[in-house]
Image (cartoon, rainbow, N blue to C red; front, side):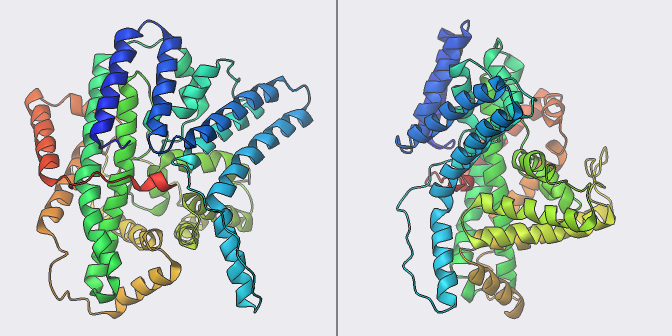
Length: 479
C-alpha cells in the first residue's frame, strides 16, 4: 500500500474516521486500532512479513522488562546481548546472507579454488532495517538506564509498527514516540492542517520531482554507454533530485500523517542540498539514521574525542556501516567510504561543526561564498550518488570514465527536458523561500490566506499535470 495510491487514501480516511469519531475518548482502543491498522497496512505487501515484526516486537517487549528487572549488570548485559543477536541475526540472514555467500565464492575463485555458493531464496521484508533499529534502540536505552520499559503491550506493539513511519522511517526513539501512545490525545485542528500541508508537499516531491526524474534517470543509466559526458553528469544530477524527492517526500507524508492522529515524529530532512559542507549535509540528510549511528555506534567508539588515528577510524566505520545498512552490495560500501573521505578533511581541520546555522539566515539570497560552497558540496554528493544508483562498482567506474572521456557536448538535447528543469527550479525556489527553516510550517501559516490557498491550488494542479501513469514504489522500501 503506497502513500501515493488510492488504496492508501481510502485506508487513511477509514482509520482517521474511526480513530477520532468512534474511539476518540478511549486511548487503549485508539492504540488497538492503530496496531491493527498498521498490521493491515504492512500486510498489504505480504502477510508473511507480519510474523517477523510480531516476533521482533514480542522479543524486545519481553527483553526490555528483563533488562530492567535484572539485579546484576551481568544479567542486564546478557538480555541485551540476546536482543542484539536476535534482531541483527535475523536481519543478517534475510538481508546479508546471500551477499556474504557470493562474496566468499568470488574470493575463493580469485585464488583458484572452486566452491559452490549457497544462497537463500528469500524476499527481503519491507522496512526490516527501519523497525529493527527502532526496537534495538529501545533495548539499548533501557540497558543504559535512559528509559523505563513499558508494560503496555498494545502500546509497545503499536509503537514498533506505527504505519506512517513503519517501512521507511523516520527511525523513532522510544523516548520520543512511545510516551505519546500512553498519553491522552485530543484532536487539534491547527496541527491537522499542518499535517495536511506536509503531506501535500511530500506528495509533490514524490509525484512531480522524484517520479519524473526517475523516468529520465532510468533511461540514462540504462543506456549510459551511448551518452555524452554532459548527459551522464545530468543523470547524476537527476538522480540526486530523485532520491531526495522520493525519500524526503516519504518522510514528509509520514510526519504529516502522524500529525493527523496527534503524534509528533522527528524531522528527517532539513533541505540538505543547501549544505555548505559534507558535515552539514549529514546533519540534514536522513537525520534519524545519522543520529542513530552517532548515538549507538560513533560515540561508544569514542567519536572524535580520541586521538587522530582513532577518530579517522571511527569516521570510516560509521560511514561504511551506514552504507552497508542501505543494502547488501559493494556499491553501498564504496558510497559510504567515499562520504567518509569527503568528511575526513573537515574532521582534521576542526571544521566539521562550522556550519550549524541555516545558510543565508534571515537573508533573501546566499552570499557568493555560500553559493560556491553549496555548489561544491552538491557536486560531491552527486558523484557519490552514482555508486548508490549503479548496480555494480564496475558499472559505476565505467559511468565515471565515460563521463570524463566522452565528448561533453550532447548529440541531442533529448534528456534536457525543459518541463522537468522548470519543475526542478520551482521546487528549489519553494524549498529555499518556504521550507529552509525549522519553523517553516509556522512561517507558512503566517502568509496571507490568499497566498496559502494559491499555493495549494498550484501544487495540486502541477501534480495533476505531471503525475506518472503508474504509482511507483519508494526507493527506501528496499532497505
